[in-house]
Image (cartoon, rainbow, N blue to C red):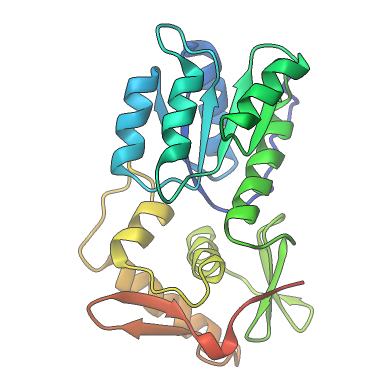
Length: 242
């Protein structure tokens, strides 16, 4: 696999499950994805990958199509049969059209042949996630703000809104789920790494800080609290893709 000296930082903030039986490749991909800001869970076998997918809501699953000791395509078929389905990126061992066609027929949203550049994988993950959220453009506008999921910036009237990485992730996640009530546990799962020790009010505190920062900039209230349920980006200010 060809790797450049710089990792591509584009893409939505997502939670990824990487199912790859090669320890070396699994580690390289995991480090690259984490450096790009993604929360990553890994599995060395299809059985472990299925178990992880059962207990966690992933934005994308990256699957080696030819797992040692497992039938990779059968794992792909099983994952794609679950509802709601998770976008799948299959990794094929060669560039033959037959392999790509078979992976796509089994339900993969995309197929990437080895060897490949990490940047290529990141761009494909980004496209799958945007497709999942019905956001074909990397630019999302709402409430007087312009959010760019490629370079992870937020602008208001052409000026950059200074947000911490975690504040950006929170705003982006709510924007991608416009009009949908997002529970505290869903926010914890997508915004915070498993290595972070969470306090009971961590989500409430993050929401409050983000709200106050946007209000200080003169942005109309965007985030509503649905007591006992979670949070929602205000429907009357619903995001629209550029």
